[in-house]
Length: 204
Image (cartoon, rainbow, N blue to C red; front, side):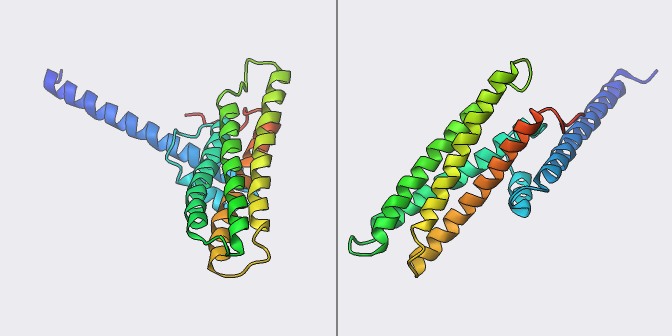
């Protein structure tokens, strides 16, 4: 029989191997579900890139995926809101873009609120154990809020159609990114509605 200290070292080594294997399996599982779910998203490449670099909780099913997508969208919207506010406050009242910037800041503020509500619904979503009616009601709310957020993003962009210059370029860059990740988030929510979060779970 091996000495006690050697058995102890072997136990530690075994535990390290098991932990590494489990973590690796979770990583691969999350990667697989991201790639398969993003395949038919509105913006597949952006979908894969943003969700693959997501640093939140491990993605193990479609509900996790939808929550991650909404969190990403919310983060982009909050960042754009700060940038737009700075530009709005720095532009003189006589500039033609001023009114469009004021409206856009309001729109992106609404979008942030709507995405926050969407995330709140998804966090309390009952994909199992609850009634079908309850699930449909929750999903309807999530879809409504996410759709409203996307509409606000597009409305902000529309307000700059008649302008040219650096301000329009910056706003278009920020808001296009927000609109695209929001569109992908809405797609993930719709996929969750179709599957009720059950298919594509990651089993280790």
